[in-house]
Length: 334
Image (cartoon, rainbow, N blue to C red; front, side, top):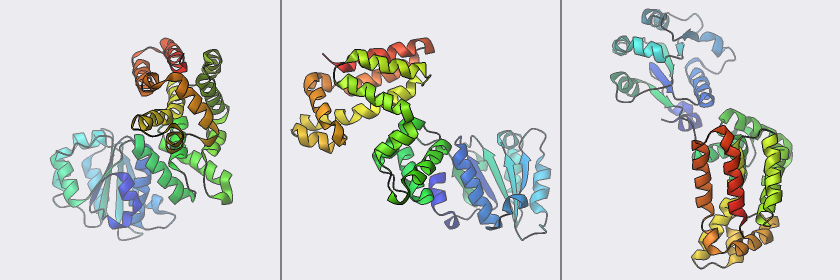
């Protein structure tokens, strides 16, 4: 079960005698661990102090953990033992853990915090049968945008439309912790309005770099490649990563690629631009840009983006700026 599903209603999922929290997304792992602690120890403020924690290095013995699990707690009828960074511990004591789970402690719950957790091992199958495996894999693409929208709604009590959430991901990247911080800032900023607009994200999250990126794209669509390249230079002077610059370019061009696809199916330009999600203030500029490009060039917009993305991943840092500069010249059209 993925952590996003578990965290929606932890009370519906019994922990059993063992929980495996696995994956590389630390934000989700911490949230899942806190939910497990509340499930086992209750909602008291001191539940963290009631849990026993061990570092899962080569010095940790299985007997130490098992003894702790079987020790009667002075503060309640449940015992929670957490082994952090437990990959080495699991590797060293896999057979012993399998044997322990044949007759686990009645009131003890073992939590294994690991990065990798192959599902075809005997131990993983035993945990799936007796306990609770929680996957904390990194979120990407639409799954990340959906998570951000749900997080803004459930945790920060604010509505975050899909286009605003997607723009936040373009600006911030895929760090859930940073995205959550930015969502909290936006919720405080919009206040009683209770709805975040794309302009709010541009102003509060993107800052001057976002404004520079949008100015760069305006110049590009106007056919002014020189001004677009000058704006790009300012971004590089501020040490903005090429990946984020390319993300900003992609955010502006994807709606135009959708317009091209719609018109290819017979839709008229005006309705297609509106349906594709182009910002109302950019409608006329988008219309002029696509007409100036012509259909054959417009149909290559996503191809240019994908090719630039591939080049960025294959080039050294010294060549990255040249890749993005070339992209801008290609996109500026005749």
